[in-house]
Image (cartoon, rainbow, N blue to C red; front, side, top):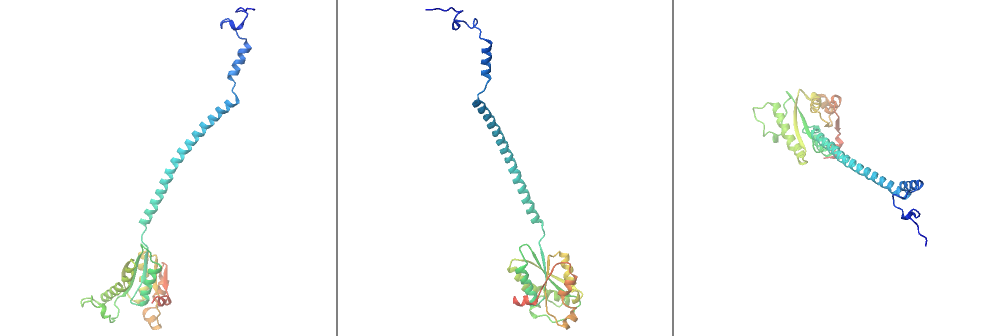
Amino acid sequence: MQCFTSQQHPAACSSQQWRAHPSASAAVGALSNHRTPRRAHRQQTGRRSELDLRLTSTCASSSSSVEPSLELAQDAQASQECSAAEVAPPRRLVVAVNDTEESWCAVKWTLNNIYRDGDVLHLVHCVPKNSVRVPLPAAFLTSINDSMDYEDMLEVHAYEFINSTMVEMASSKKAECRVDVLHVTGPRNAGDAVCKYSEDLQAGLVVIAAQPMGPIDEFFTGGCMSGRAIEQSKLPILILPPQIASMMR
C-alpha cells in the first residue's frame, strides 16, 4: 500500500499549509455573487408586491380622505338649499273681487289651479270715495251703526261679504288668505289702484274676472277694470273669461 505524506495528499494538509489556486478562489467568488433566474424573479416579485401594497394603501387612504370631503360638500350644498328655501319670501297672488259670482269663481279657479302651499292669497276690493249712496242688503247691516259714514259702511259690507264667502272657501282648502280693501277716488281708478297695490306687494300674479258690461255701465264706470289693468300693470295679469266662470257654477 502506498502511503502519502501531508505534503503529497491535499486532504491531509492543514488549512494553513494548503493554498487554493487563485483561479479557484475567483470562481467561488463569482459563483457566490451569481443569482439564479428563479431567485432573481422571487426578489423582483417581492419588490413589486411591496410596491403594489404601498400603492394600494396610499390609494385607500386617499379615497378615504376624499369620500368625507365629498360628503361634507354635499351636506353643505343641501344646507344652503334649505336655507335659501327658508329665506325665500312667499309667493303672493292677488285676486280683484267684488260681490259678484264671477269674482267668486275667480277665487275658486285660482285656488284650484294656481295656489300652492306657502302662497298668500290677497283678495283686493275697491271702495270708491264720496260715492253715491246705494242700498245695502239687510244681511250685512249687523255691524253698521249710525255713527259710521257711508264709505266706512261700504268697507264693512265688503269685509263681511268676502269673509263669509271667499275667505271661507279658501280656509276649507287650508290656504292663507287676506282681505285688502282699497279706497279710490272713483270707479275709473279701480284698475290703477289694484295694479299699484299689487306692485307694492311684489305679487307674482294678478287675477281679474272679466265681467260683461253694457255701454251705459262702461260710460259711468270708465270701462272694464280688466282692460284698464292690462294697460297699467307691470306684473303678469290673468283675465278669467266669463266662459270659465259659467263652467264653474
